[in-house]
Image 1 (cartoon, rainbow over the protein chains, first blue to last red):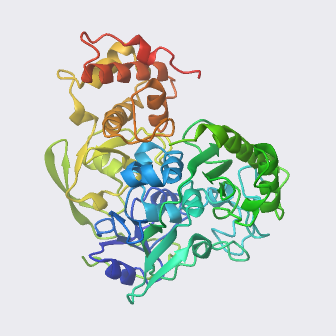
Image 2 (cartoon, rainbow over the protein chains, first blue to last red):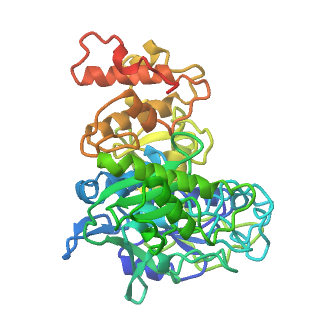
Image 3 (tube, each protein chain N blue to C red):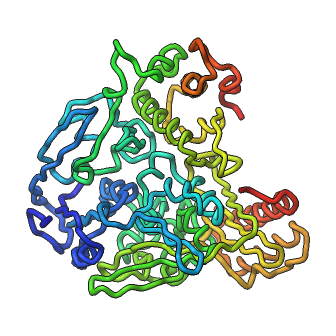
Length: 324
Length: 208
């Protein structure tokens, strides 16, 4: 691992200030960043440790929603009584990801900022526009089975790996940030994540030094919450596809994981065939939401798999009341 | 705290890197306070093995994929390869050496021996620390992917298989590990009086 200097931030604003300089990075759980540093993919010159900041509380908001501090661990968030009761899709998504050890360390802010798991992003011998801008994309003609089918570009087809973020998208959560000058921002997830375009190395709209302070959940949406993940093994694997659903008749919402550079949601498509049976409704929703999909030969299976997964979710929970 | 050396903002460069100044770190390891001067790059795993010579904690993949390096940090199971020692100044670490000794085994160590919960043994310290953390998580009501009701976390062999999925065993001792941990859970919860295996909890092993 390359050498870096280390400091422990005393306040959120000081952390933002200390991370303004090029080459400086925040470190929280470290479960993704340190792995990438060992592989020489991330090369920070300076690490700003934010673990001792007071950003680890889950608090009720005035409108009945919930604010989740950026440092709340995945385990603590999935276990929180209000999340289990009112935002079960979030608990379900979190426990579908990683392992117990990683969830004990990984944070809410860090989960949002975890980087792609594209095999070519990880292979420093091969071109990757996300790792080395302008070097090309080896995945376009390579092993693309796990990668994205929509929202991609000719520069990058990596998918976003988070399960948690898919649930946050279906919940209409917002990301709260703080800049070094004290300015705060609130970003919807679709404004927080960039699509790759010509600049796949830029994954979010965060500015230099801008710190995620937390995530805000709107008032409980009601409905039946489901997170269904399809993967190559039963546990401790990234999604091939996933569906985060809040089932509530015609008002049902769906977000999709494993298929795009960010959690994928198309609110207009959610209304498609809303009165039809599960199979027809799933087909209509996926056909509408993925009309612009550009899969490769190797990952073309993801669109029909998503259709069947959504169909299964609708069918299983149309009468049972769903997961708790 | 100001960085002791200051290439702050320096772009990463090729060629020889300056060796960063060491930082003081105090950890309570297995109940003993240990103060070290460490390069900030040193992982908690390398701190335990190379600096404190506690080689019970194993380095398998060093990338968070195998679970062999699992230790308890302030009582919670974590991967010691994916965290830096300097991040944990003032915190408490329990390793396999702190769980028990050959003369005074932890109940899980005793159960692993009797149930043959290993072959080569390389993953075992991680399996044991992970099992300690897992039983605590179940007792605290932390849900898992296979929990049917998020508000009613119950022990089962299925729960163990899911919760221990981050600890790989290339010898595939999984059924015996599940049997050993199930027995300890049963005895801690009053269901076992004599320390023998609880068939109902463990016999379906793998192959679901």
